[in-house]
Image (cartoon, rainbow, N blue to C red; front, side):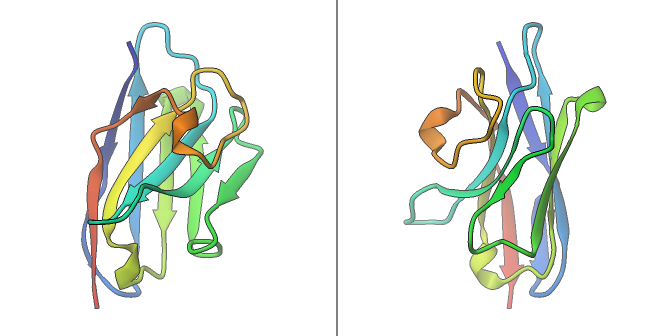
Length: 125
């Protein structure tokens, strides 16, 4: 069984920064592609960023390009999302997902096999 635990969310003013972490654990966990998604009230889950198994390939949603950076540390089995220049529209619950089989991240939430419980990010204007 794979467990993902997100942390780092909170309340921040517009223009500020936060760094989210997603720590993965599990006896048989193999670090394949990982992704960050977010879901605001009344909206569908939205792709934010994804990173390949090697870390050499990253994808970003259009709304966060140039502001957010995804990275991973294999030694710690952790994926990070550095969020800069935050806007009120970034307010959402952020989830990390792990893909059991793909090495390249997918932008579809259906492709991910494991999810964390989510961490709330609130950006005040």
